[in-house]
Amino acid sequence: MKYSKSNINEYIQLYLNDLEDYEGEGDNVQISEIVLNDFKMLLTESKEQDMTQLLKEAIHNSRPVNRLVYKNFLEYLENI
Image (cartoon, one colour):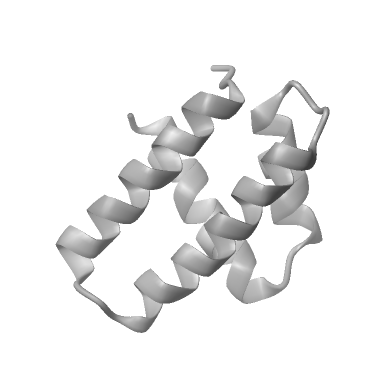
């Protein structure tokens, strides 16, 4: 499935809300907020139209901790 920038931004917010609801205010939620908010800025600056490809590139180029956040978010997208 292809996502637009606005869809991804909306799904990021939904994902973060769900994390907060199910996990509380733990470190995982804070790390996810930082990583995904950085990704939102990357989306804003990017001319890339394929958001799934951009997300996969972010996964590939990220540190292991960030990679886990991106992978969890991608899994969330695939299960919506």
